[in-house]
Every structure is written in C-alpha cells, then in structure tokens.
Length: 88
Image 1: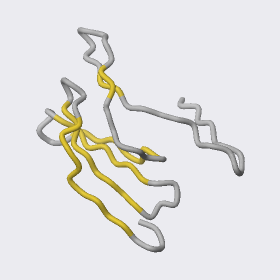
Image 2: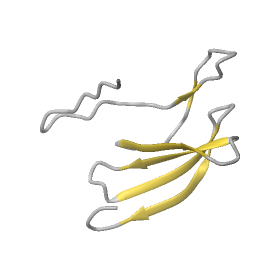
Image 3: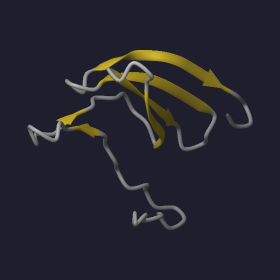
C-alpha cells in the first residue's frame, strides 16, 4: 500500500525526489533534476541500464522525459519536451 498526501487548495505540493539503490549496497543515489512539480511516471528502459523518468509542471502544460543511469542515478539528459496550451 502506498499512502499519498494531497495538498489542500492553495497549498504547496509535497516535495518528492527519486533515488536509486542497489540491494547489495544499500546506499541511495539521488537523481538531480531541474525544477518540476510532478513526477508522473518511472519506467525501466528495455536495456535495464537506465530508466525513464517523466515530469510535468503544475499546470500540466509541459512534460519532460529524462533517462537516468540505474547504477549512478545520473541524469543522462532530457530526451523529450512537450508543451500544449491546454494540457499534455
């Protein structure tokens, strides 16, 4: 079970972050990202060497997709940036 806290109207969203940890060496390596409001999705890449991390702004008009190295937690760069006047 995952407990999720939702902010009340007019309050800030909770600040979340993504970390990578190997089971054999339980030390968290935090992923460094630019400014974001929501972490929408995290999914393993088929090569198992990296994972995809999707973020959005609060208005949900901008979406960014990054690749993250699974061993180091290093942000390998943004691979997609999408915008829309309505929402993405």
